[in-house]
Image (tube, rainbow, N blue to C red; front, side, top):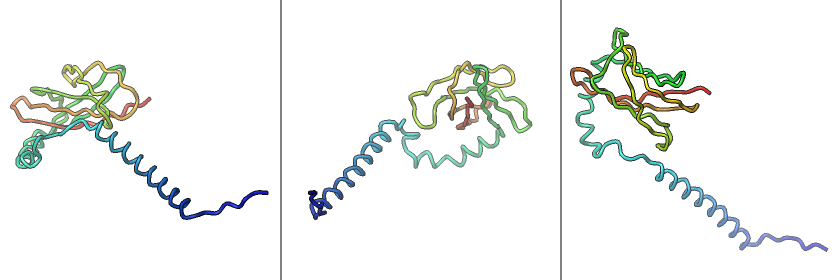
Length: 153
């Protein structure tokens, strides 16, 4: 003889509360993960940075530089070309190589100009990588760009 199950108000309340507990728990885990992996601020005061943005962008665009990156044979190649397609040697070059999603793989490649491009010894795992570069032209014009690099397996 089996007893028939009867759904009562307490059962409905327990199911309802359990569903909300799962949703809230998942939200808390995701929020913690987002805050833990946030690399930091790009600028201290975005309003102040915005005041000179258009002028900096116009100066950067006046250089006419095109930047490409590739990884092959254990080398990371960062190619900077001018508007005529000729290789550019920058006055300074600082670059951070890392994943788009977290900072644990971030590193600073030791780029050297070989007459055609900047080359660094780097062995990269397959997937999407970003190179966040800051350079200056020989006459002191600042150039900043995020270069997306996809490495095949």
